[in-house]
Image (cartoon, rainbow, N blue to C red; front, side, top):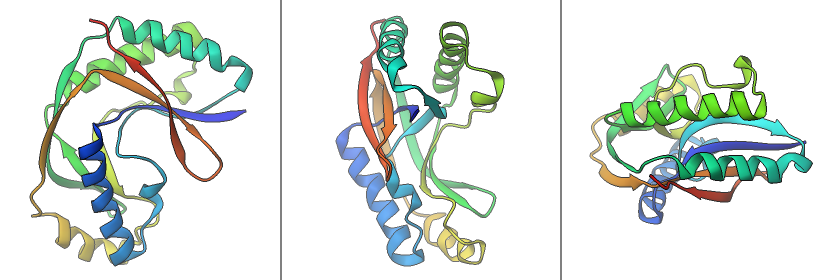
Length: 179
């Protein structure tokens, strides 16, 4: 069984910039868990699949993506969930949420994903600090990022399948939208 997840991934320039924020978290707060994956907006949380089913998964995602349409993603500033996660804020959630709902439907119908295997709620964001940001460090980290300026925009014209290599997440395949 291999571990995968599905995401929107920004272009290289934005990935570099977001990685810089993750590096700041590592240097200042020893919070490095977010560095195990490239900058991304999760569409489908990690799931296990037998590697023998990988080709079928790739074909299904390619067919589904070909029916999707591109849209713009605007990111602006930072926010947080509780005292454990700090992230780059995605403005206008609706296009990402619609894509997520369509993906969920396909994964359920085509691959038999169960409800517990699917993201229940969708709050588009790009994590820069997570699990290993200690609650006692959160206040200081949040003070550092809450008023920091960061704006970017990109066209989402594909989704990505990421595969875990045992240590971190590799971008495995890209599936371009056709609509």
